[in-house]
Length: 501
Ligand code: NAI
Ligand code: MG
Image (cartoon, rainbow, N blue to C red; front, top):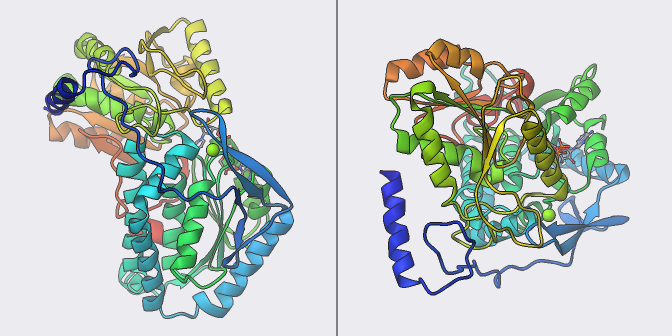
């Protein structure tokens, strides 16, 4: 059904605007370019650190570039250990003097205000997210920004009701929390972390990832406009050393990290032996399982959404497809057809499905793993299309003839590359799905509710979607098993991580 709808829409557009030849080849229908306007975007040439409610200069600055054309967008401040210390002290003062003493109702009001101002600037946020990170504006507009706003609204609602969330207890705030986020969903990860921290009465020092600092600084402007007391949220930018200074700062009471398992392990070691609380949201190698009784067209859409969404830069991406043997051929045939209709190109074009890879480093990592897959004898299929000359690009692709022991079935690629494997029985599907050091998410496609429950009971994954994929809601907890980390974000489970109960 979904596919038919998409087709009919495409037909209408191609009839009306078939003149343009400037679209990426390989699609069924050609679209005219439809770039999102960026005239309304106000970007500074230089971004300072946001500490104690003001923008303050740093000693060093680094460039942030647009990965779709490699052009410099702005310079951003590099936070040194000294700057981290200033931010933590500002957060501590704000915690002791204002935020922890404020009536929870007043806390809620400011968080609501942040959400409402973000709504007013939603388009601006979406365009900046796509410029700085390379993701299609269609996605930043429909997912990143509205979901970020929803997180602030949801948590604003909890601020004065925490004792209802945990009946019979007197939940208390923790103090200053240090938050370190990745580049795949910059604004959303900031919202996931800042909103519950504030609702629970804590103050924050948060660091953006190297390649995507801009929407966080836009959020800093919103925070200023919303009259959040100075120092309650401090936003800084830098690299691993900056992150490490946050993790090791003695006045920080809790660390919340999203990123690679490798850095997660370093942080866990650093924090062990201290009384800091810790939550880690790390990598994944999710199984998307298609049974023969599944609605195949919908399942194919689910596979596409599962792995090619945000160029595969998604920790919960459905990067391993397990398809029941009897429907293997039809699923692969449809998958080939479907990836050839995906549009790869300008992230700011409203029709783009696959934008730019976030950085040169990430592109090299994807290329290396794909080479390894081919070297290990897996069969590689990629969309046929030209790629823009400048910028970092990778065609949506998949591997067949994959064994569980192959590198591409074990390691997180974090790009638009799917590994297709097969199974015969539900038991075998569970065993294969669990055969990974990760356990963040999974998908199940079947017509039978009983089978869904049976599968869920056997699978070690923090989130299991059935007959859908990549759905998020602030009220629903998200987090992993095994090397995907621990602790939950979202819902009552997520609140618990920011409280002493
Ligand atoms: P990363 O884990 O190095 O970076 C994530 C954040 O941690 C960034 O803000 C970075 O500055 C910070 N960081 C780096 N070293 C640190 C340290 N020693 N102490 C404290 N903070 C530190 O991830 P990277 O290098 O950008 O990507 C590498 C791979 O990690 C990707 O290819 C992907 O497989 C995975 N990844 C997973 C993510 C997820 O959402 N689970 C997000 C980003 C990357
Ligand atoms: Mg950038």
